[in-house]
Amino acid sequence: MANTIHIELKKAVAYITLNRPKSRNAFNHEMRLAFLSALEEVELDPAIRIILIIGSGQGFCAGADIAEEIPDIDGHITKQLQKEYAPIITAIRESKKIVVSSVHGAAAGIGASIVMASDLAIMADTAYLYSAFGAISLIPDGGFHWLLANTVGPKRALEMILESQRLDAQTCRTLGLINKVVTHDELAFATARWVASLADVPPLTASLSKEVLRNANNQTLSQSMDLEAKLQNMCIQSDDFKKRKALFLNGRALKQGQ
Image (cartoon, rainbow, N blue to C red; front, side):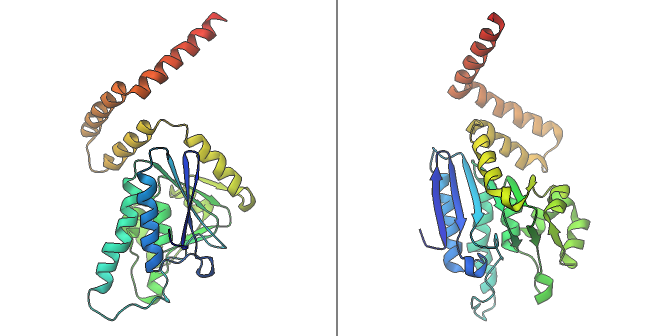
């Protein structure tokens, strides 16, 4: 694994660290490939239930490294976004694991997209999401429009993009972009405690609930209930359900006998 990305496995949690602190973890070509490789690697590990994304240094992720030379070739950026950025967001969104972002500093551009694409997110009260593409005559990419609009609505999303709004942690939580806000000093401990709790969630519950929610916006209520019914059958037939049911009933019987 390249030095731009670190992977550390702690029981059922894979810690993936964005590691270009001198550039506030801005993505260059090497880092994009390394991050996608890391996501794919831990996705294949059956022992891993949680993927935790964190940043090193002062920022979570400053977006794309604008210091990286971009060839003046028509269509180059289109191919780069499609081949190097889109697969990252897709891997996060389609993961069968629970993907959590822990944000201690600024998350801009693709960094903000990573946070929004994650299943769950926790932020330090000093952190923020930011998109300043308009300042250099660009538009957000990496799924930013879709991810933002599907959470806050198109009108609010456009306002935020056009005004290059900096969204502090509390605002992000109010808008539903993240789940939790803690102080900067509490973030590491709060994150570790949260992911340890999430690691106890049955993998099938996590992956299938994610599937239902991913499809919810494109389905009617009736279609969503049909999908739930089919997936619930998978759960009922699983060995994990049978074991957990037996433990649950045994525990209840013990309590009733006391």
